[in-house]
Image 1 (tube, one colour):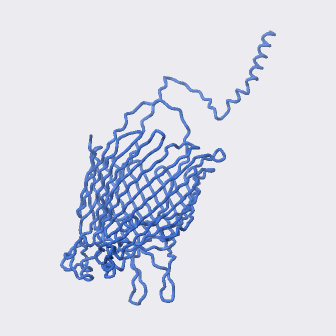
Image 2 (cartoon, helix red, strand yellow):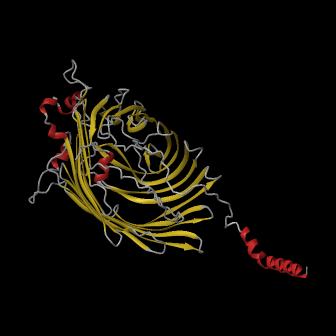
Image 3 (spheres, one colour):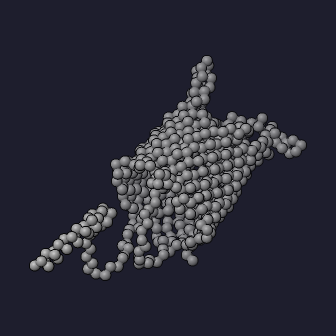
Length: 617
């Protein structure tokens, strides 16, 4: 009996001695769950639904230009999120998806509009990729008809455009985690200064259209580019990374225009932690743009006045009196840091620019570069506040992309801007995304256009640079129903105030602003039926735009305005198999003869049919 008592006492003391260790199992970081295994465990990755997002290649012959916007704010996306590491698991291997090395697209449409695209890319490789892409799209139709009148006011003759581009590229990843890249290309853009009718030609030059050669008002831009770059792929924290790129662009165009550009772009970045818990990345971004412009014409477009033509006379060295050359440059230094702090994603920095583009002397300029973003209500609402600014060169190569009908040797400047904005994004569900934003901008030397008075046919434009403030308010709405249906609605409203004035009588009034719409909007629907038939319909509208100021009968200034424009576009594709598909594109289904630029009417409706094919090996 005594032995049993001693044994019971020993058990009780033993249990009390291990009790602290038993209580430790209540730690929330340790799971104490019972698992019953009824069969041999075999890890398997379940099959999931493929997210099928078809590649989009923008078609070529849109007659309704997209919204003309001069926003040049750079937008950076920096991710500071690092997923936690997981142990490797054994999975059932799947065969690699078959890749195709080439893609061919051929089409043709009314207005004599051919289309050809070819892409070739190397197949799957862990350390290299290379390829070539070639594109040609053009249209050679005429606008208007002679009718019964000998000099018709609605006949503009052939209104062609042609775009051809060939580019070769390659990338190589070295053993020490460096990515080397290279690119070389050639591009040709061709058009004509067709913005005059038969009646205008006869009234101004007293000539019928048959008596002038089309080469007298042609315009061709040729661009050759070459680029090389190097980039580190090591993204470890507390590791220094860098990227450097060099690009050379040579633009040589009709009427003795030449522009050579050297662009250097690079950054150094370093990831670290703040207070041992907040992740951050520090960047130092450096850019340089140098431009050498020369203009030495031997001829000018049809309609140049007598004083302009007199300037073509050559001196003893063979140079025109209109000859000019200039070297311009821009330097940008942009230090900034991205970090997360208590749920706020913060981007803080500044841009220090040395402007040697607008004036011969170097002038320093400072711009803000800050963004704060915060998600609320379990990511239902995201609010972003920003203050950004920068300066960007408007070279001949950029001017002609906005307006291909500019005068040879036009004045070029650099546009600077300060933008202060707010953005609210609502993630109402996985299918609905709603976005609202507002931006207040101050712009100096902002770009617009007006007709050049030195060309009597009124078919050549000259750039105009204004200092103004702009308020932009807009939003977008997107609804996605799986892969079957996608609806998009977006729009913007603009308010402008020109800081430059002109004298009218005894008063100074605000100078008018040209080619800036008061609003733009678009509605689009995309349907994907079993990945066989894909269709998209898009409706666009662009608000009224002032384009000139004239004197009325009373002698007061009157502003002329291009009317509001509408555009309806349709795209349909039928995929016969993985290698072959057929498409139909129809632009300007409303057959509207609108004017995007003064005196330049558009095609009424442009239809394009064709096929895409992957050449099997």
